[in-house]
Image 1 (tube, helix red, strand yellow):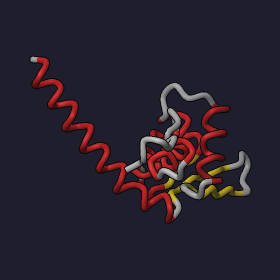
Image 2 (tube, rainbow, N blue to C red):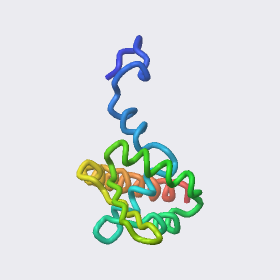
Image 3 (cartoon, rainbow, N blue to C red):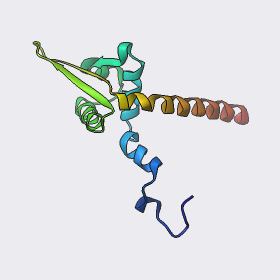
Image 4 (cartoon, helix red, strand yellow):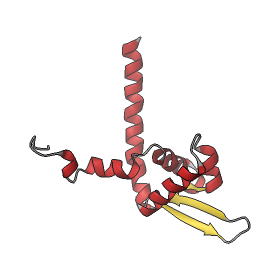
Length: 118
């Protein structure tokens, strides 16, 4: 536990570290779609179609950040037009069980909320 006199933002908190990497609006859906796809690999255009509401600029920015954080790998093919595929890195694959746990927890909370509001 954090002592009362310390500011959580001045410590090395693992939760804050994780949220810094994956806590933005679009990063979790991107990771989830890649993880759920065949061979855990998706082309840029597939992601653009699947992640509803994201702009091309924001998708590119998030993909670059996820790649910089070593959660995904980018593979570019020398074709015309250029083809780019994104897949989970080994580090990214280790994140999936944690996301599945959060998913299950949220599912339980949503059904509990539904029961108590009825």
